[in-house]
Amino acid sequence: MALVSANFTGAVRLLVGLGWPMIYTVAAFFHRKKHRSALRVIRLEPEHSVEVMGMLLPLAYFVVIAAKGTLSIWDGVVLTVFYVAYMAVLQRIPPKDLEDPEQQEWPIKKIVVMKPLKRNLTISGLFIGGAVANLLHRRALPALPALAGPHSGDLPVRLRAVGGALLERVPRKALGLLLGPQDHGGAHGAHEHGLLQHQPVDHAGGHDPGRVRLLRGHVQPIPFDHEQRIEIFLTIAQSAYGLCLLINMAFAWHEAVILFALFLAQFCIPGLREEVTFLYLAFVCFEVLRWLMRYEKPLAFYEFGRLFRERVLRKR
Image (tube, rainbow, N blue to C red):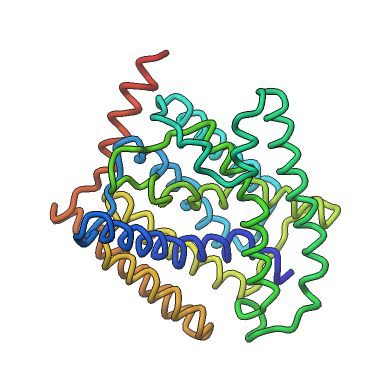
């Protein structure tokens, strides 16, 4: 049971706490190399507001899951509805130019140029294969020695989070290239740096509760113990802070530093999880206060509302 929450806590925390700062670091390095100047901030395009707002409902619903302390098949249904609605809105936003398949890894490059039927079957097969591999390696991981602590410090939990993310990367990336939207709008584009290509809404989809039901063989709700609920609340707080940053439609260097520092603290010293959770929440309150004082404008709300009216409602 200690591994149940690893898919939607460890993967998300790795993505936001480690992935985003790494993306900024790589982007800043090559920006300086190319332009001989510092990259202060990664700017998001108006179309990215759809992906940013897509994180809002799943994140809010995970507060409900954490509060009630159980995960049921009905939670999976709700999260799946959120994901389908998100994809439906995203499909109605006209995509920009797709990334060049020749610049992608070999498997992705081959999948994108396939004929539609063969391509769809291949992507479906990869998802099914990833689920099977995830099931098989799930049984092997508990035999590995624990690194520290009864839950968050377990090496199996950490490896499961990393392995699950890697198993799903190829088919999800291929779908991203096919569905869009993508960005070639300059050196500061968020999609060019990969900031929004693997976002928490993907990991918060409704597939995890359904897969847990299949593994357990029945449909009773899964209860979370105290340690797991702490992990979930920590993930929610970190994701909420990351969401607040992206609602500003920009990702600055000091924000990358804060995310990495807090991730490193709770990763190296699991006993600080509750303190780090409150720090994340404090930063969330700080960002909300900046919006209320009009020091920062929550541009994602305005851009999403405009795009929804212009490209979704007017097409009906």
